[in-house]
Length: 289
Image (cartoon, one colour):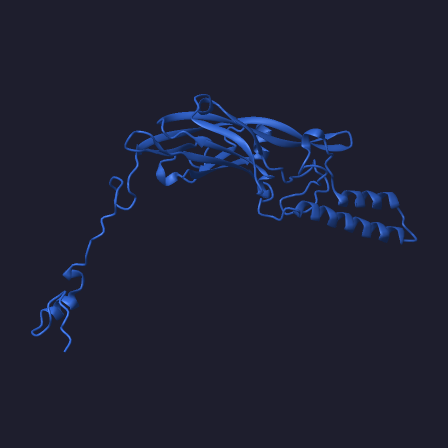
């Protein structure tokens, strides 16, 4: 059965967009640190892939990789799926209440200023485009505390999660791994994730690249848009191979060394009983009288 291996791709989106590069702004982790992976928590992760072969030299097991991208400086992926929409509805409800209170004032001195304050409280709703459909469609801009941002271009806000759009490079060209994007019921990844099967029968170190799409908030006229920005980062696999062995004994495959019968030393009380005068010998049943 194939082994599952997760690779976390954590991106500092704010700094990456400012530097226009993922260099020093991406942090990679996997769950093979104790088995030889190097560069944990850096952009230079080398993932350890342990392969195994049978006595005839054929491949015994392969490795399955799963890449999971996350954002540093954004709302955590553990919040409820409809959290952003719920916060947007709450801000709309508050704005309507303030608007009702304003119309009930008989002596409003400057209604234009009050309406402008209400407009700011509503927040900024990002326009839907063909390239930003899905979760980004029509959402309001919020900050890390879940509050609606009144001025999206004057302060900090929560970025959309990074999206892996392609995996390529030496490991793919030499057919060491076969990556593809798969559908999933996991809503944290918007129903899609990248996975690959690794040929663990070919030892060596192989590099690969990931194309990652980030989103920058831009203003065009009176509209706010999430503009996609494509960047790349590199990583590597180190494939090792060894004969398949018994995990209990540490030796070759075969039957476990189980004793055929218990020894007398394992039951000292029974051995002492059989040594007493008048006791029957082991294995002898007394005759019924």
